[in-house]
Length: 333
Image (cartoon, rainbow, N blue to C red):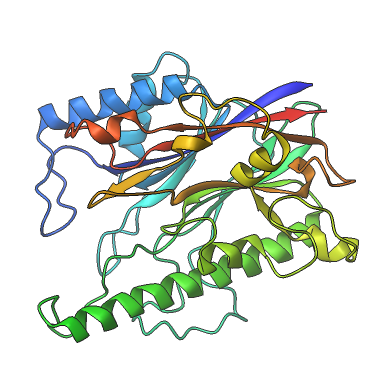
């Protein structure tokens, strides 16, 4: 069995020094940028993944600078697009870094598929808040896998027309608008994935910040739950074609197939990626298609282990990310 490793990493606002991002966020000084870039580079080397998906990249050049500071990724392949300079507001993009070959140029999906209803109430209701990135990665043995890097709409309230959080109703409605937008993004992503997976019949891996837990409605929409092939990996009696478009949470697969293994320091017992007001939750996920679910007759490998790199969340270091990283080890048969 040959091992390959995939990770997702929300770096928390990587931008060059002096770049203005948000009204309530001061630009990084040269010293602050240097500390942040150095910390991210160390985390990347510690992950030691073959493929890493990144979120909150305001500058692909800054990410290239980070890679130059690593030990093991200076020659890695980098895929990503800078934010649209003509957009009404600056938003971060996603990116991917791979030590495996790529089979085709990367693609970005800014707009929702035409058959997705756009009723989020947002002025950009036909677009993703952060466009998903699609890269074809060549696995060992020359098989191609479709890898998506995603960052769904945040839970931050979407205020309109001078509304603010001082009014409970305005806060509730603004939070609802964010939820509807994220839900619509989940539907759009599910449509993209279903069409691609059933068309190409290739393995698929989705790396990202979903801004929701694995059992949240928005995440299960992306998974494609509702058929006979359960999220824990149990094989039902449904049609094979129905299962082909499905995805599975790698951590649930690992738990269902390796429950007898003792927990390690970065194991599922401490599987949180964010801490907010004392609440620990996992909103960063690695989803895999049935080709990496060992109970599937189409499996070409299986989830061996899932690790969470979250020790920095308790240190309050200004250069560190406010997200933990998720690393998934896959074994190819």
